[in-house]
Image 1 (cartoon, rainbow, N blue to C red):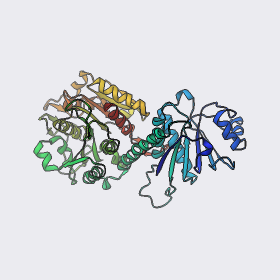
Image 2: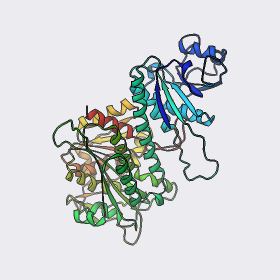
Image 3: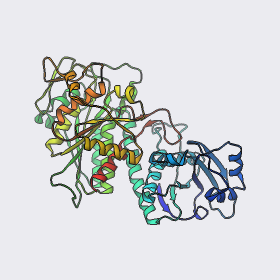
Image 4: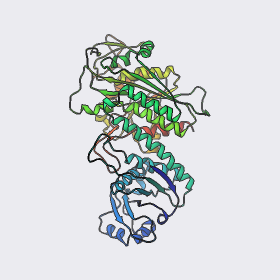
Length: 498
């Protein structure tokens, strides 16, 4: 799909459909709405007087136009609520709502007027990100009743703005939006179509297309490195594990010497729970337990094109977690790459086991700051639902920067504590640590486990288990994988690069 930036007035924009943000209790007799009301023959004022449309967030009103002074023949008004609450999230959702609504009407070319002029480039970026995200559908393998309508172009219209700035923002939005949908597509793949080997192949294709360095450690290489924690999870599957490594190296480095940010993502391509077998209900959703790894690959895909001035390492440990005669059993002891011994109490707490060795390997490769992301605990959904992503870590400045980056792009993070007392819950009687700490504070004790491997390296952990999957569908997004954290990580990296 093509994306464009425009600084024209709305009646000059050449698109089949025109969409305009409208705020709560806004009147139809002034400014832009007055122009559109005249073009619509008074239909906007009529629908507002009848209180059928009042600009409340999520409301829509759709019209066919026949005005000679307007090129667009369809008009969509999208309610955005209070103007004071019209922030990054709402601007992005506007783009998604417009794209999904007008595509359903078989409109091929659309123009969106976001009516947010604080930073034209940033606004254009958010609108396009939302529009592209809105086009994602999880129906890849459906053969009937499949959405076949497509948009050919999206134009962001910011009247009077610097056209070049709007175009830059639109193009950046395309890169970010496509990388988010790349992540969502990977997360939506069935386990049979997204094995560790296939995931490594996808990462290799990304590296080749966009100029990243690539490596994928196999089982023998992991054995040589002593990655007993990761391999202990992989033991129950016939699918060989992979440890994917992507690296972005800028042509001109700006920052401290030897500084290296590492993104580490959990890649359990299907999680049955292992010997500690999960209940059968909803187990099909465990195909998305590799979303952390997909997030790393999608983020690396974007930054390879955006070209920030700092190096970034992406590490994704990938395996299945299945029961078999070879599988790790509750009570077994695993030895991690660091030499630390782990008593396995529950084989369904496998994500932290593979992340332990991946974090240690990132440090071996020179990481000076680490952010890991994982669909790690069911407990996080109980604590925060599907609104906020949990963030924990050892470096407050790093945590604050991630949270601030999320605010900037419209993603919410909530910090949970990581006091030393929580580590007592994972002390083992027969090994150094155990892989679960009981029912209390499950999200925190999982992070306390990972802390044992990040050690002195500044580290932040994102538990995306509650936010990586969206159900039900919304006007701006399909049901299914959300691509959460990709935007935040890109923003964080670009801020770090100055």
